[in-house]
Image 1 (cartoon, rainbow, N blue to C red):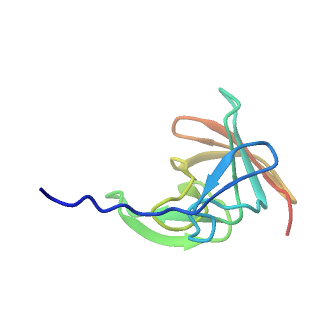
Image 2 (cartoon, helix red, strand yellow; image 1 turned 60 degrees about the horizontal axis):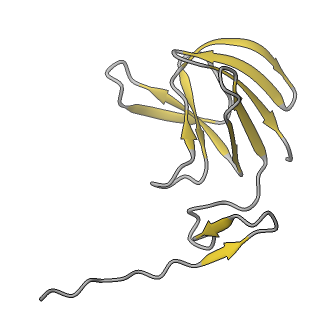
Length: 117
């Protein structure tokens, strides 16, 4: 008979009664500086930090940036195997101003707000 290894994962219940796990390990963030909304269904994703990723023609990673541009994808933190969201590449920047950008990707339209510096 083989032993089953059990892993304990720290969990908390927030003020809304939602269970949040592994905050200390960076799996779930509890502070948000960015809010992304997908136009077609109103899906909301929030993260502490963001990165803009650039890709080679063969689809492999090329570089990361702090600013959006056509051809880049948005990656929302945490920046580990548990990242919350990554868009397909930007095809058009519709509107951009301080703390806000509206952009189109290959398959969706998004609005991104910076909530805090």
